Amino acid sequence: TKERNDIDESSHSTLHKKSTGKFGTGFLTTHLLSEIVHVSGVVKEPTESEYRNFLIKLNRSGHTIDEIIESVTESIYQRNTIDNQPAITYDPDELSTKFSNTQSHRGETKSFQIVTSTTKTTTIAIAVCKEGKSFSVNPLDEALPRLFCDFPLIGTNDFSFPVVINDSNFNPTEPRDGVFLSSSIDKRIAENKAILEDAVFLYNTLLNFARENNWKNLYNLVDFKSPQKKDGFDYQWFVKNIEAKLKRSIFQAAIVDVGDSSAQKRISDCIFPAGETEELRQKIGQLAKEVPAIRESIPRDDHWEKWFDLVEDWEDDEHVELLDCLCLGQKVEGWRSISQTSFSNSEACLTWLNKYLLFIGDNSMYMNGKLCTELALFPSQKGDFCKKMNLFVDGNIDEELKNCLGLFEGIRDYRTILLHAKIDNSIDWLRLPTLRGDNIIEEINNELKRLDRDKKYYHLSETRLRVASHLTACVVAPNTDVFPKRQVDLFDFSKDLNLFSKDDEKALVYWEDGQHILAVSNSLQISLLVQKLCDLKNLDGLQEKVAPRN
Image (cartoon, rainbow, N blue to C red; front, top):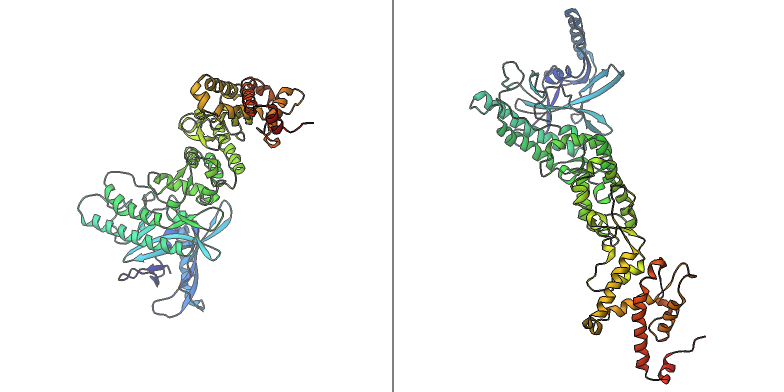
């Protein structure tokens, strides 16, 4: 028999089963799956109380009348032996009807079962296969008609519905390649529309049942494309009363297997890798998987392409988020700074960013336009994400010089405009200009001179003196042989007057840059020493202030 899930009309609750005879529309659909199909299941005659197993071979491989008669005779003989089978104990909660067919090019045998849901005269059907303790939904063949009026309506394989619908009350068109669904006021059209609305209700029940019972590969249960406008088809009615209701059910159900876990999420809570080619989608998906905040929102690796094929048609819907290279860049920009990302540490974030930027460079289609020019994708040395046009490569600028410039009020911090040192600036497409030590030295000197010229700043601001003291404390350089002794002496004299301690020493790593700046700062520091000596007034005061040096 073919077992159907019969919906209780009064309560719309669900699911008890009834037998509808030995040969129903479930058998008819198998002819579209393979030339030879073996059907097994459980049968009970209406006049009997016992259940029995059966196995029937449906063979449509014959091409002559004699061959067809022979195969039908064999099936009838197998049917007539059912009464000779022993009685069994039947569990109504188990799916008992199975269909198996052999793939001739591989010699493989595939078994599946047809799950149906029925109300009134309307039945919907989907094929599933056993997978552990649960079931996996099979895809519908592209050539399989979606509409049946007991027999298939050939030509409805592109009908916008995710499962097969059968109803003996359908009013098919004259060539039986569809059903009447125009906007005209007609009894046949109204009946067809009512059947489709019943099918939507049945679909909602089946989808919820599949989700609650942890069925797998549910993308095959939601696979349908939006309808096309055409003559004789009430597009507006279909979109409002069929497509919208189907999508509402689909978007509300947690049916997407995500990440590496067994968790399932709603489509609206997922992100789907997108791109021009499957190769690009795979690379974008792999990049996205490495981002902790995104990882658990992406479908399982082996489901990416299945879901993309589905949701690409729905990308204008607010519930669907496609993640192409540009969208991934927008997420980077939304992080604002390295510290606000979901990575465990800055090193992990910077490593990932290098991969992403290299991916952009390897795909020329992304080299121009918004992705490379308008998005803040590039971290500065302060950790904030900036636009490419606002950044420079650090040409080995000494860190103490950057710190020194930061002492001026209202002067930009070079670290806000320098590309982070851990970002690979050898990537060809970055092509950032370079700032060197000479640039920052010139800016420091210009500021010191400006403050010296402006008497208001000379009397009221201590900025220039803080800068001079900072530079005077820079007495450690890698190559001490070329480091001027006068700079060490100036620091020691300042230390004697308690302007510094030994712990205040700082290192100028790139001394060849530092030597150009010290002439201005030395002058200011010497002036400060002179002022301190004057404040001591006499030798006795100096003797008390300065401890003897060996």
